[in-house]
Length: 160
Image (cartoon, rainbow, N blue to C red):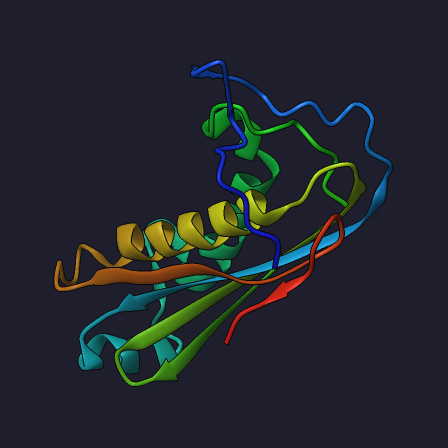
């Protein structure tokens, strides 16, 4: 992975959007993950189809929220480019009792990457699960939001 000694969103010590006008379109993909730690008894409740509350089905609602967030990243994070998103897919799995994993995959054909969109989608899906389960317990923690994979552009990255 290429490293640099300068922040990309600063120009003359002032915030600046990166100029991508001269870049060519390439296929871009990013996968991000976020985890939410919940009580084990709540894990069991989510697995037993009791995962519907007044706001709707917990995981389905989180998938919709994460997808909407990924598509709205440029409105949420200053200096992010508004880009055409071609694909968003969110998987939510109970990795082990008490740990829910949210994986967000984003694809685009464009001049800039979709890492922030994948991270935003995974994060908002985790926040939605928290919101929908807080009536049962506040003993939840969103952890480990990180980029897992990025392809396209100057460099490809795959993290363990």
